[in-house]
Image (tube, rainbow, N blue to C red):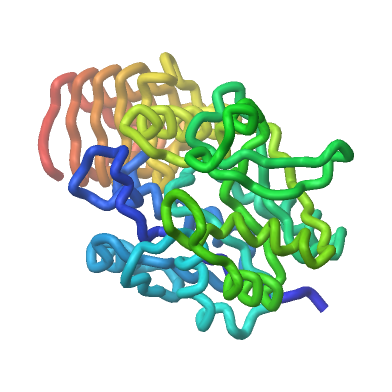
Length: 336
């Protein structure tokens, strides 16, 4: 029998490095709040149930959860990642395994989570943590291994020695843990660290102390698992998602000229053999048929285009329905 699983998504933090009055997970990346990308990935990975831990600006975050089948969990005080997971204990009461993710990792992919789940279950592991390698690991928790490669602990940047800060293997912040061990271990984690917080990472040392093997799932594509902590990283995440979407379209038979300047929202459908010139933005569940031609500089939102439609350059159309084979003149603007 396949074990049941709950994903716990941590979305309670302030995100001070964003330099913003808005909660970090609400910042938009590629047409939607970054938290939505994480929740959609969890859904696509086939996880049975999802709980979202909210705290900072909880009402705004809760409002954005509408439409997602999730259980909201309140963290009244932000006392660390371990404390955040403890707050979700009741939401995980009926599950066998708990996957823990952060709400600021919009690039994580469902295939990666599915592979991690398969490896964890194949090993019959109690604790699996995702890691990756970084040339510049500043800011991330380092993985401490013994000479045989056994994971001993995770040390946070602020608590690390200079030698430990040179370690390139970092904690990606994604865990898969057997529920019984997870909450028993978290109940024993103290706050003896520079932040005075309950660190989720301390469950690794607790597992070692009990003779429980700590397994790693090393993801080779570091960009997929890194969190967004600044406007610079937000822009990089946006560009990565844009590139993924455009590759998907091109592989499906859509021609994109200057794809790095073209934005097509995930909820839009573009027909085969359509050609899109540069500097185009398509959003709002726009659909278009086959053999369309969208000129450079166009903005389409909420539109429906039949087969063979041509939209002239620099047109801005909202909620238009255009019959097959119609040509829209350049510089056309309006709400249909």
